[in-house]
Picture (cartoon, rainbow, N blue to C red):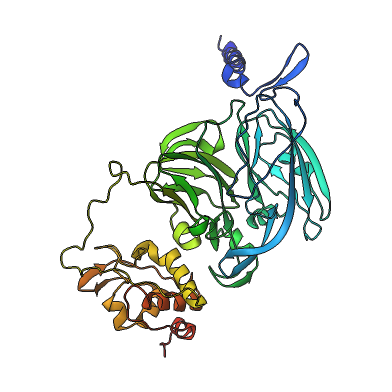
Length: 487
């Protein structure tokens, strides 16, 4: 009997495996033969009707939802282009792109569609490129069939067998370099029944960028392989540029509307902790698949992965899109906005009162800012908005008990040049500003800002927010950075 036990256990295991294979859980992803013909889940038969030319649009736009009830042959045309564009104000970078944008355009098809993908490589490119679409079930996701030298075109077809939100990217060696230079995008494969109706749809993809220069160092920047290998990005960005989704470029919604975001993460290295400050995801498709979580605050988006999230916008105001590995948002650029318009909804959100704590100076109105005609002043405003306002607030009034005001600051106005060292090297310990004590930590900005940016932002603050005026020069910042004193 003891000799039979291993055989019996093996037989029982085989029966269990056979039973599992026959279960619906497994069959949902099966390939089999019925009456001599092969059937594949997600294959709804041959394309019907004439071929459809996919109408691609630049991010953050997306193609229109699909309302077909049958599979079609969808023709998608992409072109790889190497283009020099701004990665931040005054900073240029040689992006490698699909259709001239980072990310490349969102491709939208229906499960069961046959996709005919044309990949051209611009004659002015210096590299061969290809494409790996994570929605493809086949060698290299299409990469094996699309290695395309400059001035050439490749074509391959695939059937979109699984619904979901998928990344695509270049997979030509060295793969990390091609991705780090911006060669990625998203393909949405809608289920046969389509997606639920929403009021707004947008497309946001995060990427980490590695430049030889420091954060905001002006001029044309080159790719830094060593930084990439160490996973130390200079920039972490939405849609390939700092400010691509803020200010005049912000996404928009209205009170009571619903917003759908197709979110990708090209990487090549970092996992995104995607969050909307002031919003909650009603629905979040886990890793871009068909499993949906509800009432989600922050969702992980792996490098080479996606999610699709939906949120309602019940009150007016500005919501912030961030990678909640939060330094990436406020110090490396991963920041976007959704501006919600409409009447106040005090039953949902209402600021009851505002005023100084006991002993604090009485705030007064902020003076009008000086003209942005002066480029240095405009650059100072940019730095203040992107970095300083996160703590000191947009009106420079700070937060009582937490962050001191820069507006009407007796501490700043008493010795403006002292501020150079504070911005460069940071500050900790107790200080008194406008008769109120503060004990917090300001991080050093010297590693992130160059001499001109520090001079510009200090000059901007000195000449705004009811301060006394004055100027700081890049030479003075340079002297303090070198260990000396400003003149």
